[in-house]
Length: 378
Image (cartoon, rainbow, N blue to C red; front, side, top):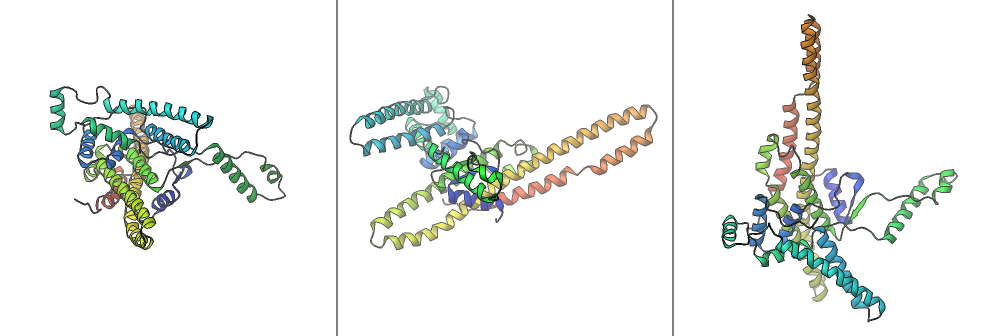
């Protein structure tokens, strides 16, 4: 699949950055449901199966206002501890330790909420047995592992104040260069603050890809037309939750393998040559992942177009309904000829909804085939 969407996914991942202007409406963070499905890639297969079963049974984990908070607090705590490790005592180290302790307590509170939230896990013997039969019971150790996995939720991070100022200055300079040197605007533009475009930056290409996959999962899953009878066949063809899990599993596995290759390349005598050869082979895996995520994006685009078309057809239906009411009024006044002519005119302007939606369904089918035709390992 070679199109603008796919090319943009490759660029975003390469830069570990998503630019807002290309596609409006990017969320600040992914949904809890998508975060849990992605986190399932970092736990054992048994726990992963339970998480998927809970998703299908509409049994969410306790909410903390967005699992991205776990990632942000975990990363910030790691940065603070790294700083104190470089410092050897002193007032600055003491202040950092104090803040790290506060973050640690807050993080532990959130972990406890997710691990033992009341009303989300069976507590009595009969309830636990029932949930085990249904395949939706999480043991305490499994809950702890899931929370640890949720602390790796892909989340964009806000640039520091220094980075924001540098970005604004760079944008202002670039804009000034495009203007005439003798222009009055050019002479004053260097004194103006030019805001940067909306961007979301990520830790690496893997977080970027997972954030894109989760965002498009949310977009498709929340689409009214996707949940309608119109796309019932496509929903049977594509298990959306399972596909997100499999994309996450493959992405996390690739990330871990490439990290190990870097370690081998640094340690072994012939490590660089070995790592380079294996990296080339793994590039195919990355390309396939990008294709699959890009296909999710295309499905989201098609659904958006379908919803827009349905709204347009609904507007036409309302027009026809109004025209029918006008016909009745005119008929009662005896002017049936004018009514018939007007009705024919409106009918000629209408588009066959079956033909339009059929083309959109075919487009979705092509991308479903791309996603589901991947090779699964048993």
